[in-house]
Image (cartoon, rainbow, N blue to C red; front, side, top):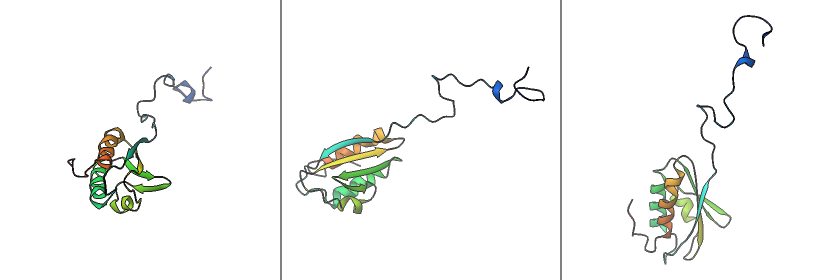
Length: 124
């Protein structure tokens, strides 16, 4: 008896599926979701243009999506204008959210820029 109604060769039911413990070789790894880190703005000027511009230039070097949250407000981390519109004053808590292939590498580097006390004590 065959698994097909007629013809020669194996049918679709004759293909052995991969074991459940191992994903198919062409399947991308499952996404773990976005990574987040909470940062307190300690710069006495808050999140000002110079920091926003440096943050966005650094974020553009990564392929992952970068978002910054201040309460319910969200900004695209790759846009300095969006970051300024968050109006993050000294002492504000911001959440840096990254999602994508190089998110782990981007998270700490970007959070350090926002948490810098002087805003100028890091390199790009």
